[in-house]
Image 1 (cartoon, rainbow, N blue to C red):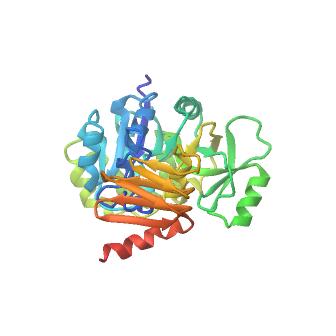
Image 2: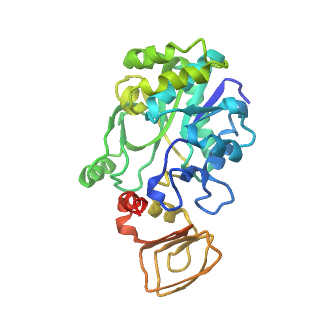
Length: 353
C-alpha cells in the first residue's frame, strides 16, 4: 500500500431530505440506509482503505459528530478526525486538511470523497481512483471523477469536457450549474457532459498552489496556523480562526477558476443517495416495485413504495402507490414520492411541534 496516498472523507452534512431517519444529531452517513449491515461512512471508509493506508484517511466532520465517528470507525485515532467548529462549506475544510497533510508528507496525493454516497462496484472504483492517482503524481492537475448521466437530472451540477479528447482522462472545459430540464436534456444529447459527484483527486502540492492563487485570503488565514498543525496546539488555532474563513464550496473557490482541471468519466455504478426516491432505486424490490428496509410488511394493492421501520411491529398497507412510509422514534412519515423535495420544509414544521 502506497504511503503517499491520502483520503479526506467529508462527513459533516445533515442529510435533511432523509428525515425522520436522518436528523441533525444523527445524520444519514451514520445510518445503515440500505439495510446492508454497514453504515454509509463505514462502507466509504472500507472502500477507500483498499488503496489508502488506514492511518492516512482523515475524517472531516462537525464537532458534534466526533463520538459517532470514533464509535463507527474504531480503527481511527482521534488525531485523524478533523473537527469543524463552524459550518463553512467544503473549501475551508479541504484547505485545512491539505495543509496538515502537506506538513506531514509533501509528496502526498489525495482523494476528497463524500461519506454518504453509494458505489456498487468497489473494484472498479479502486481502478478508477488508481488511474487518477497515477495521473496526479505526474501532472500538475486538479482532477474529478465525473459520473455518466443516466437521465436529465436537474439536481446535479455538470462537468463539460473537451469533445475531441481521445484519452480516458479529459480536459475540463467548464463546470455548469444545476440546469433546468431542457438544458439537462441538451447536455445528455451533446455527449460530453458528466454529473459532478463531488469526488476530487490531486497532489497536495497542486491543491495548495491553487488555493494560494485563487483564495489568497483564505490561504493566509490557514497558513497562520502552519506551526500548530499536527501538534497539541492545532485544536486551539482551529477553534480561534476557523469561523473567520469564507463560507464557500471547493467548486466555486477553486475548480471553476483553475485551468488545469481534468476529469475521468467513472466506470462504476454510483448513487449520491440524496433523497428517499434515489434510495428506492438501489433497494431490492418486490414484484410491485416496493422497496422495504428493516420492516415486516403486508402489502395489498400497493406499488412503487419505499417502507422503512425501526419499530418491532407489522405494517399493513393497502391502496398506496408511490409513497414514502417511514416509522421512526415518535415520527410516522407517509408522504408522496413526487413531493420528496418538500421534506426539508416539512421537517422544519415538524420540529416546531
